[in-house]
Image (cartoon, rainbow, N blue to C red; front, side, top):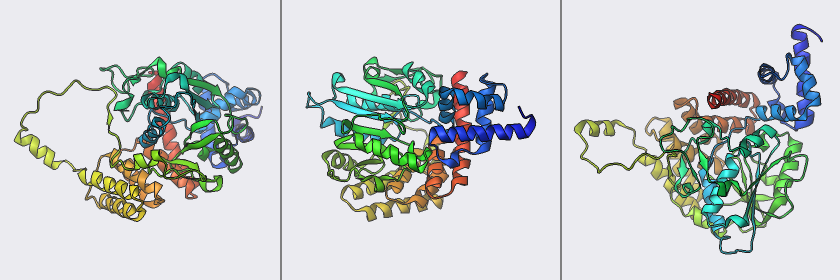
Length: 441
């Protein structure tokens, strides 16, 4: 054993080599300082007494290797992430509901702690799919994440956006619990959990579904963590799994679709793709594109019914008048969605750019949710710079807004700025560490 810094550097170099050979992970994520920080955390947890000893553990323990890879990939997850994706899924599945003989199999790759597959199951049941017809296959290479998911141990930060009203029969939190009261305080109906089949697997190294058997496939914010060769393998597996007319849901900064024979499903903000031979004007896409505004979410812990309205006081009127009016933002977003529904991308782009410029000049100060939706729509139109500026605005107002930080990390990477992306990911890791500490409290 070589003492001191030289020994530590050698150990980190060996650990990096082991991870690279095992994980097919993007090289820019294997930054020595980040690896050392994570490894020291694992040593503090009792896995090893030094970096050199940990390197030896990693050589002989594939489960620990997968756990460390999972930490590097920042397994951020929450219920109904990208809400428009689940609206599209429900709309598509509603067309399947009358066909009682047709099974519905949905694949979730990189399921982490299980919020995504639970959201999928709830969306499918709410769309009228009979439980006995539904199978959600949830895959992740991290055994600990899968075990937590099987035990229905949801991280405390996993219910940050509230729930769609249609999800209420299957998922709820105790009325008086605060949203961040601790892991497990959210309740998922067993009818939804029973439709999920959990599986520990590396989708870059083994088959994850029979060809042509999946009604939908979710693989969101996974490809960005892989090296180029692994991305190609993963995309081949994902597209092979798609049944005719099926939809592939990716993350908003993942842009391999051109080389994978895919085209947009036609619903901005859903980040959804289908095989290029499929009809891009499907009934599901047309139905959802006609919607002028996203479905409003209710808080998970719903307050008691409000009392009868009373005439506001002069002081209340003054306070209301002083608050920023986000009505203009909603109108701009609605105008963009109407334009997209009629196929006028230029008009949608113009409305969203005008809103982005008004926000930059301080003329509009919409709620973070509205700003985030506008950024997502701009991104779906290929306007990465405008989208990045809006995400930056969100983070300026709320430095702990992890969705915006993740978007900025992914956009920085896709624009060829790995150092910038690494800085945003480091902030995300610090947030994830804080969330994990809250979960343990």
